[in-house]
Each structure stands twice: as C-alpha cells, then as structure tokens.
Image 1 (tube, rainbow, N blue to C red):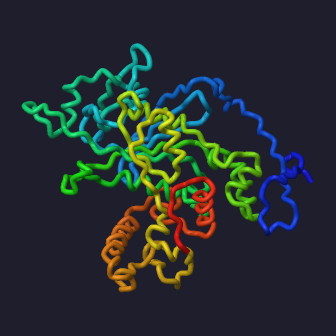
Image 2: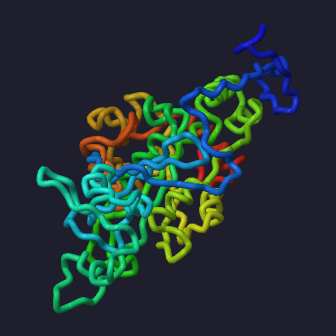
Image 3: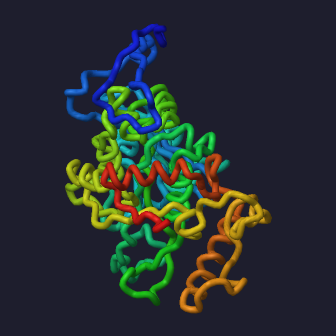
Length: 409
C-alpha cells in the first residue's frame, strides 16, 4: 500500500539487521512543493553572501549573551550566533578585542539615524531608559579608541592591555527533538547547554600561568538551522523509525537516500569571519567538538582553529561505568537533585583513595551547576542517559570518525 502518496521501493543494498526476517521495504517520499513565502534566494552556486540583520541582549541562566541573527543567499533560513563577551556590557566604549559583527556595524544606507542603528543592535555597552550609544562602522576606530576600551588604562599609560584568552567556540546544529523535547536518542540538548556553561566560565588571563587572574569567559555558539545532520525533521523522524527496526543512525540515513552527514560549514565559516575570526588577521579559536570533520571544514573556510576541545557526555564524564542505571533505588541516583545526577561516592567512601579527591571536586562542581537556576532547553543542567544514546554515540565514533573514548562496559 502506498505511503505518503508515493510508491513502495526496495533497498536491498542497505545492510539488514538480523532482527529482520523479510527484506526492508521503505516508502518513497515525494518532495514537498516550495511555499511562496520560502522561495530560495539565488542559486547555491553563487558565492556566499551573508549579513547579520539583528543583535539583542538575552539574559540566560549562564549570564547575558548577545544573540545575532544572520541571513544568507544560500538558503531561506535564519541562522544564529550566540556571543558571550561580558566586557562589552561594562561600559559604552568600543574595544578592539570585542566580538562584534562587521556587517551589523557597517553603514547600511546613507543618512541612517542613530536610532536605526540602536534598534538593529549596532550599539556599544547596554541599552537603557536613557537610550544608548550607537557603534561606529568597523575600521573607523582609532588606536586611541581601542586603548580607551580598557577601564584599567589611564591617560598617562597607553600601553595596550594583554590580549584576551582565545575564545571557545561551538558549531551547533538545530535539534528540535533534543533541545525542545529532551529526547534521549541524542545528546544535542545536553551539548547546547554544556557549551553555554563552559563558554561562560571565567578563565585564566594567561593559560600558561596558573596564578594569573581570572577574566570573564568569552566565545561563540554558531547555531545552524540544519536539523538531523542536514536531512530535515521529516527525514529525521523516518530515520528514528528505521532505528527502532534495528538500523543504526548511518544505515537509516542511507536507506532514506541521504548521506550519513549532509551538514556544510560554509555558513558557519562566514558567520565566524563576520565576527572577526577570519583568516585575514582574524583571531584564532578553540573549537568544542568530537567531530574532526568540523575542524577540517572550518579550516577549509579559512578559519584559524588552534585547538580542538572534546565534549564528553555528562553521564559518561561523571559516572562512566554506571550510566545504564535508571532505577531510583540504584546507586548513583540523587532524587534531591531534580531526579538526575549521581550521589557523591567520594563522601560514601566507595572510591579508591587515589581518585577520591578528583571525584569529590567533580561532584562538588556538578552539584553547583545542578543547583543553579537551570540550564537551557528541556535537558537544562541535567544529563542525557539512555541505551539508545549509547548506541547513537557508539555509531558516531565507530562509523563516522568522531573522537570520543567509549566506556569500557
């Protein structure tokens, strides 16, 4: 019987799990007709043309961020950049090290007013009832302006302040199921919140000097609208059904006629370049990812990735050999922490003496962020924990080349 108005097709080339007694039969899915309101801009063969259309301050459980909205000529989607740069909000001054959008700060038309610039987000400091101060176009700031951006610089001492720590950056792809519903099939919701948390943490002003003073964390999360590793929400849901039938995430994508990973990094590279991370004198960055393809993709776009920072699932990081437990009666479940999170085994004396100190410190940090006002998305400050997630991550490591140490059990 036809599905979705299509015809039944046989895909004998797709590996069949042993649970299937009959050949896998899949429906063909006709392309949805484009809606008049979502017609694409020029053909994808055109060079990338990207612009930041708006910027606004958003208070989050992890601190204040500046949310940037981008549009491109490559698709009809609205991509985002979440910028952590607390120094920008301290004073109404422009600094050379601020993470700012060049396209947003540029002059959009002759005779544009200061209010127009304030409304779209081209301002410095913070807006308030007394108004605000519009930014000046990139390139119009002088050396004196840059030096005066540091509150610690006096008129008699114009020595440039030391450069800020290298920003921490995450390229994150939209995931409705993981971020909004808290799906346990993937760790996307957890990764988004953990990225926000890690970027917001204070860091050493000199990474090579453990005694150097702490400075506010700074960095960017580029949020790309490419659901399901680029295949879209419809195909993603169909792939979930295939996974329930015994296929892994790669086999499911291939069975639906997609690649294992159809994401592209040109828009991410364009956004980072607009924020000052381009190869033409742009700042380097530390990239949070387990996927070496992201590192190669961004470097291919001219972005200076100086370090890859791995991301370990919270359940594996905190409780690596017991992450399959789900019963409240089992060791490691702390109902007082909102129904998620392990008890302090270090305090119970169940750990080897050599690891007690490290585990106690880790548990203290975990309790602190579990007790904060909450995280973002459905997962928030909690953790994703399920056998389905473990299978998903194992597939990403073994079949997609992701760099992540799998638990021994």
